[in-house]
Image 1 (tube, rainbow, N blue to C red):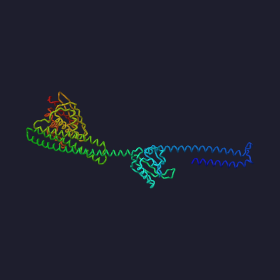
Image 2 (cartoon, helix red, strand yellow):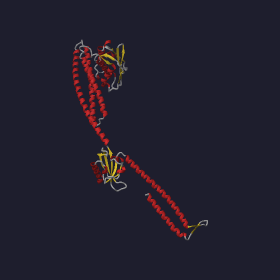
Image 3 (cartoon, rainbow, N blue to C red):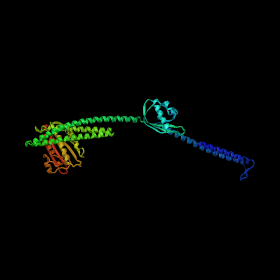
Image 4 (cartoon, rainbow, N blue to C red):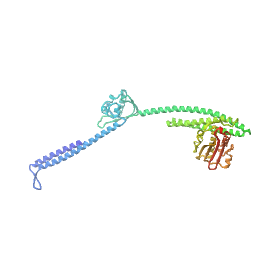
Length: 498
């Protein structure tokens, strides 16, 4: 357009110069122009001067127009190069074909899939370079559908062979398109390579199938463990009934009244590991239901499964520890009528055993805000671990029930020192404390200030009897209202120091 406009201006200028000469020649034959100084200037000379000025002006304007044309041409070329660069940088396949199937435009990604270059493929028939003839027929049919009906076509997933023999999966969009420099209809195709996405989806589906299989296996294991727990619970309940019967018989005898009270405490004590076992089993069952719900809703993640395995392992460990502890107490206290030994003496690590005891008792305090610390030394003692467990259990349960209200955040510390071949074990809380009247009755059987909360009044009585009769030690209690309570148990380190 700028070139045509410049040509029209030049043509007009030449016409004007010819007209001036046509007028000047007749006038120059008869007339002269007289200057104010009296000099004569031929009219023809004036015409040449005017023509020269116009010519120079036209040359200047022509130069300006030429520069403008060159600048616009350069900008257009740069724009075309930028557009080509953008198209070639696109990771998607882009190409334009006419009705014959020739490439009018193709980007580098599409050219690479065909093992050629953009320049070589422009103007070529797609069917001449595509590596799979059957697939080319399908592509040709899809192109013709767009040519015939004039509507876009979208295919969410279709296979596409690369020249190297690999098969990729594409999401293809075909659009009716008319190039700006031609009236010939064409089809613009945009293809997104979704091979990686498809592989990821297949891998995800495989993982979900594996998770489902693992979930089914876990359900089976839980069912088996639940059945085992039910059988163990039934056996333990039968033993508990026998212990209750033994308690009733002992209470009838004045001579064995004290021992009868101890057996009653044992019956209560066995409920502790049973309760912990039931709690652990219920917790495991609730987690399993939650996992099944998430799986059914498609929300199950690997992290959820890992967490379930972790909590399930911990719950199973807690379950088995408490069942074994209950069985151990039952076996031990079946001998109560014969002697007052709670179980066989054996060496054990004090700190590790207290940690184990706290782990088994964790269901009792894990939902509270209490902080429980084990400061016991890492030493070996030769004593009765079952009885020691019984002491810790009763002291902790006593503190949880009596020392704190439901909204309190308590601090309980267990510690131990060695003095003159004896272990001095302390259990201290920072709870409500006790007045003198309560302290005087604390170790009496069936005395409790919290009967409405399940207190039986046997906990501290069992502690006293176990320390004095089984461990051969002493127990001392100090307390003040509002300042907490501390129990100090002094016992032999081994059988030799008794």
